[in-house]
Length: 482
Image (cartoon, rainbow, N blue to C red):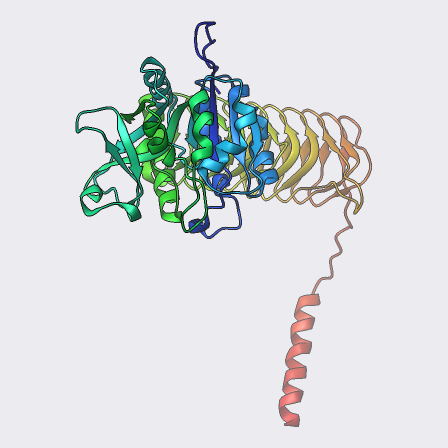
């Protein structure tokens, strides 16, 4: 999160209040509206990030109500402060609930917690316009080709920045409905006139709520300046009121992310098929194949290739790494020029060393695999410390769980683990040692040793032929008996 500029002594003290108390009933969800995700994080987190680039994060207040504790848990790590709106009676009521928290400020900018595309540049533009024009209220307006369902901005004159009122569509006349300039629900208020007049809000409406939009008419009647300024990009102010709108916003965010990455030197084949979160970082000359997901705070180095259908979440990938198709990584780290896959599964705590190979249908968890070590086929490695230049044969399992506790397996540098071996932890295989194929190892193996733990092979010549003859005779007798 970028650091906001320092405030000069002569500057007004500005707070940002984010409306985040609503249920979002049109989403038909049990979850709070502002916690629905786009671009890999909650709607509210996007708004907080933009706000914290304009003012110090301690001057950002999220007004929460519905499932307040859940919202606080989700975004509390951002440093934002919270105001509880215990009873949700509209946007005007939200600022009533925040009066004590905002009393020490000169200006408050009101943002919507479900409008994640708002940028810090637009917030700064709104703030600067409001302050320089000594307004009591400034409405961020936008012109839409289809303004249906939005409140209309009614100006005092066609070219005037001053507005007389904001009229909701259901209350608008036919002429007013032709107006394409809409109220975004984003405002700047001077704190003193706001709270000197907020008690004049009325709840004479079907929902019995106090609407912040009514402050425009109230302040205008009180001879206070009520202005509007247009957003440069109308899409910034659009909220997510339906699942379809969530999908549209998510698509826009992700395509914008792909465009930014491609401009910085990343190749993305069919970017419309890829899901790349906003916080992900990818180095130049990395190639992303179709249908890749790069999620969370993942960092991918330069000169990598990420194969189709791979899913990488909150992981760190070095330079020159090849991730073949179908790999899944979660909280893993991979050092330079390692090769993964196809179909490798790196679970949390996996650390793959430089130049190491993890192949098809290999699963790792809480493992350190050293430089140039290889586990190429059908293997599970859990709770293990594996040194450099180790070869782990196909079908090897580290038996790390005894039903109560996890135990560690250590395989030292240069060891060779034969195919289909079972290493029962806690156990150590020494340097340059060999474990014979199909062995069950339950005791430590010293350096430069061979461990073989399997039953001796028994040969019975002619046994198979005798069995076939017995079966044929039995079948003949059964047939004759019928």
